[in-house]
Image (tube, rainbow, N blue to C red; front, top):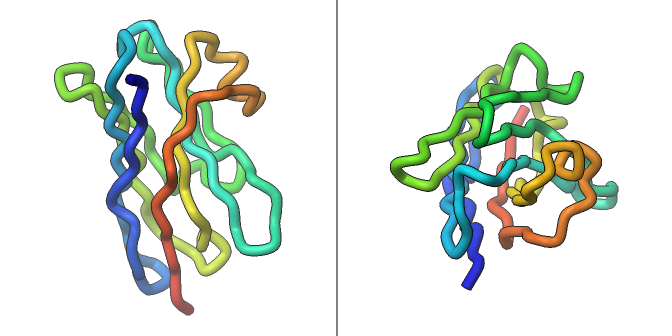
Length: 123
């Protein structure tokens, strides 16, 4: 059974940090790209950052560039999102998703999603 399980969300003050984890199972981790997405209340889901486990390529959306870092641990089948200098506008439910095609992940055209973890940044 394919599973993506996010964890690490919580309440943090503006300027603070959180590290999200996406634990994957049920597929060959190293053959897949993993992406982080978020959806704020009343807004559409948007991409945040993506990583290819096959070649290590990463990509960041402009809104998080320089503040967030995506990484992958193939021994643990887990992708992390280190979030620093958090802002109130980063408040959202954060989801991870997986696809064999890195371009599909960047485009958000994927079918494998986790259930999400809530990040709340207070001002």
